[in-house]
Length: 252
Image 1 (cartoon, rainbow, N blue to C red):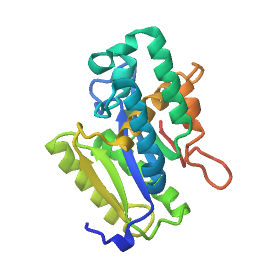
Image 2: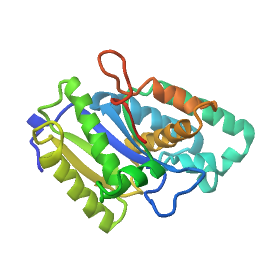
Image 3: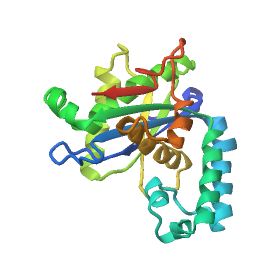
Image 4: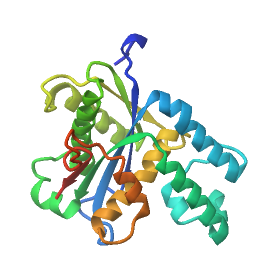
């Protein structure tokens, strides 16, 4: 749906995932799927997030065309191969940690235990893990936006393209949920924006860095997880400070 400048809201929502969608071949080492939503005020996004990420890239690559991916930071190759050198890796991770600590984002995350989903939810939700996570997350995201006074203005929800078939399915799921089947008893003013995987979007790179640490914390809650410690402080909470069911939604 097209929107006029007068009814654009103040926020952007960026979405990324960790884990695959398969219920027939579940990885025993990582049997979870996480969909992370990073909610960013447009002013903060343009004046801080994009600026800080650009400066960070310029320091380490001399240009800002590299797209940050958590996987390549964790298992360095190609443009990230310098991270195999321990002193550089420690400095890089330290600066990245500082940038994430100062990130002015509100985070909503949906964690799906795929074994539990297959046993208890799959039959009622034939669209699968991704669609269910998207619907669950959109419900919480809109609740967060409403608490910020954004319930009557349009907000873009920005995701990476996943393939022609998957993109069409997502668009149908998104519109059906926002227009007809949501729990807010009204059409939701959310606009799906799909961009290529090669897009150098600061917001999508931030969402990519967020998703995996959340899944790891669910799988190994007693293991030190500095990234999740930072993310936890940014999870959406209700007026009482509760994050469960608001910023952190577990499907188990």
